[in-house]
Image 1 (tube, helix red, strand yellow):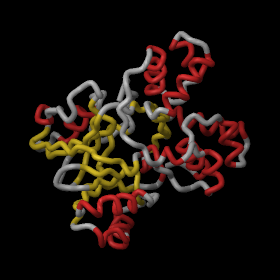
Image 2 (spheres, rainbow, N blue to C red; image 1 turned 180 degrees about the vertical axis):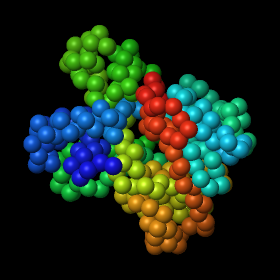
Image 3 (tube, rainbow, N blue to C red; image 1 turned 90 degrees about the vertical axis):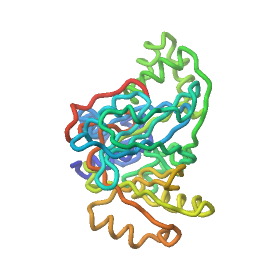
Image 4 (cartoon, rainbow, N blue to C red; image 1 turned 30 degrees about the vertical axis):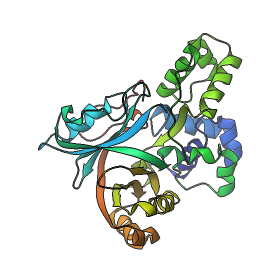
Length: 324
């Protein structure tokens, strides 16, 4: 588990994944050398992973039940697919869930989930609107002023699904590099793209401004003391979906909230300290009076987050995946 300073550095990177250690130190009121040393250690041991995520095409959730003993196999099979951004093993009515992006050049929602090894039954749930993704999640250990000194703006908490056209070779080289390591230096980006630093910086700024690339600092909740993570599948009357989705997304416990098509109308990824805290959250949240029902799936292990592979029970050692 991360100590208090490590948690502060991790949240600083959530606010600005490419922030220099000097900027982080200034915002937190800490010594720059110490921040650089401690922050470098966090990244080296993958307690925090900074990665780029492509924002192309359409997205959907794939959830299902597995044959006995095949949950880890299904989660692993999905995690190794480049179009999958996250893959979780679950406890509850469902065994596995994954988010899948379809490139803009492909027919949307064409994935045949039945061919995934390990699945006994699977269903696809098109994502209609994001209220929050993990790009907007914060650990909640920084003050408002510290967070404000690092924040990139409101766009990092309310992303919108985008359908950009294909980019140039320079764009593709930059995106590919940042998917592998979101803190790759401008000098290295320029070298890989075969261009000048000023041109590489201009292309990177445009990719982010045009919402073609999201940069995220990925933190495993358990390392931050949030030992219980759950997906809430909510049934909500259509006219109440915006109200409930917005209310859940405003809570710092929510890492991910989206409107979906299917038997549930909303899905929310909630992280709390333990089962009792989850019970309290479900029992006392004001939005609960505006839903018809909720089904809870506890996350038993995350094999992939934000396009990056992580260690999980029954899985191989984590490493980066080249595109998602």
